Image (tube, rainbow, N blue to C red; front, side, top):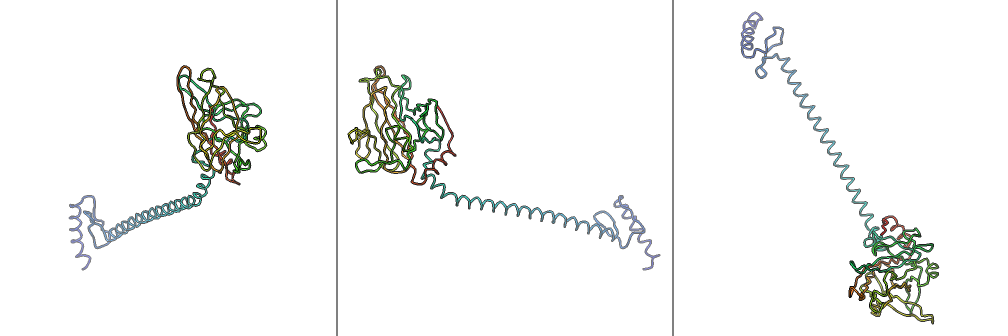
Amino acid sequence: MPLAERIPIIANVARTATTTNTSRSVNPNDDFPLRFSGNDLVSAREYEFGNTGRKMHTMILYAIKLRLNLQLFCVKRISLRLLQSTINMKRKLLPNLLVCSALLGISEAATSLPVTGGHIDGPAFGYDTVSGFEPHIHNEGGSDGAIINGVREELESEYEPDELIFVVPETSTITVSGQVYFWLPEDGQAAFNQGAPFVGIGLEELSPGDWVNGTVTLSLLSMTGPGEFLLWQDDGLGGITTFLDTLNNVNSFTLPAGTHTHYNWGFTEAGLIGLEFGISGTHVSDGFQSASATYSYLVPEPGTSMLGLFGLGLCLLRRKR
């Protein structure tokens, strides 16, 4: 169609567009044909440009979404690798931890400090008219004070029964009636020579006049851990006097109140041993009294003593009474 004939038609369309949407007027220089975009009358060039813009906008949004998904995927992969590494590490460490726990008794003595030498009394007992017997561990202090967690404690101090664990060196052994025992000696020099604690039973805090006949009874109520336990003194004639013996059911003996006595302590097997001691007696004013507490003893397996003490030293916190 000749241009002259097209002009009236264009004018008509322009007027219609202006009436429909006053925000858009027709430019005679616009390309043809004209198209509607929503309520707007636009040229083909504008229409195509707008369509291209929408496509680019969609592509940009898609690219952003793709990148976010990729980042999320990477994060998930990293998290899975970290989780897998943690699982693998636990699998590798768990057997070692279980072995150490079994050898050292960490699960039961995780808050107990090791006693490896020096003079110390445990069990030891005091008495209060309100609370009754008071089981504890007593460190004599001084130049031969107990070596607790690797440090010699020269100041006299007391501890709760579960705060300390007596370490019996695996090299300290003695044979009694044909049975080999891991040994805590009754003699201070022998204990020093064996590298062992010098452990006694302390009743100094009990006044003899407060107790009928001036005596109390010490009993072994229970034992946990491997093997058998023997408590004895040398009789000076090559024999022994037995006070406690789990193998032969000797489980109690009488002691004078106000005394402090040392014995030989023997354990037939290595491991963590718990001895529950009970004390009983008739107080002249308060009547019959009794109490009990469990004390712990560790005999390391051969070759693991240094590992055991190192492990205990790392994981234990010191607590004093």
